Length: 426
Image (cartoon, rainbow, N blue to C red; front, side, top):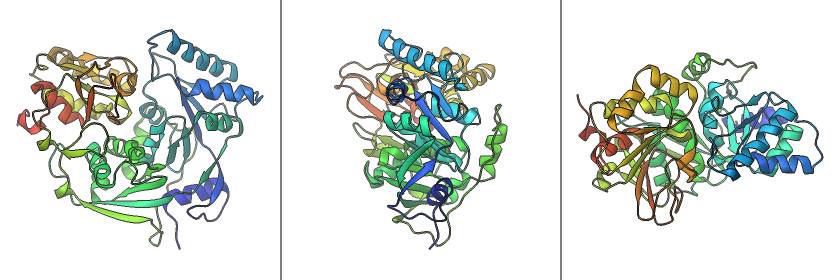
């Protein structure tokens, strides 16, 4: 019996020839990641353990992105703890405000996340790097502390669920965000609990890297341990196109033809329409046509799911020559400084501001109800983020709808949830 991509990565990092689902193993870690919410707890545990140094100063990454730039004294204190730790331990990959970005968009830019890696982070959306053919997953802060000390972590090898996307996308607006919302709508928020979600098929082959990142990013919203797809020529071109080039080798793995899967799910592009997830779970998905005319108070474009340059480009194309609807607030957050700079150079920021949108420095901000767009009671927001739980972006009496950047931009123009085709020019 062969192995899946995830199993092969586990075997390679544990010194074993083969691993089986359910097997407990200890793996070497390539990158250990923390942010301004989770790292301070890990640092406390690190110090309580009596550790002196991290296992590798090049393989620990710390990014203040959730409540940064700091919104209050408490968040400033959190960031200060992480900043001092990075300086004291000589951590090379600490990214300060002004150089940082949303962590899961920033690390690939910096050449830190590579095919075949094991990447752990004290943030649930660490699964994003599966788009590069890496095993990546979120962990708790105490596990991050142990990993920063030893460079190792234990796992129970997950079963793998295979998701095959056949055919081609139904229209020009369909993105990776729609594919993953459609999938979560089919299997539910616990449908892949502690399993690997492996994405394959013609639609994945055709997908851009930005779409693949969005797809892998939300695997955790189905309860998955990780989302993953095979690295291909498109992946390698992406890695080689970044300003910061990798300083270590990588390995590309693919599943064997006789690999064993928990289940196989096949979807056809003709059946996948633009998706909107209704409150208060990502599984409450419906085609955009069933969400039309829901009046909005706010639209947010950004986050580790959809704050990349291609996302902003789509938004700019729909906003150009239009205005944000009266009575609606639109907030646009480029995911990294590099993306911000590229958007500025190419005139996207002018389009956003001329349309009446607010543009922010990189931050997770409103995605987790942190800052830069908190909702009041009774308000409705459409966001390109990844979660719409009760109170996720503010008051428990507010509502969050999830959708792609195209739906977000069109909705900002009309003031109600809208199919982008309804506002797009030829």
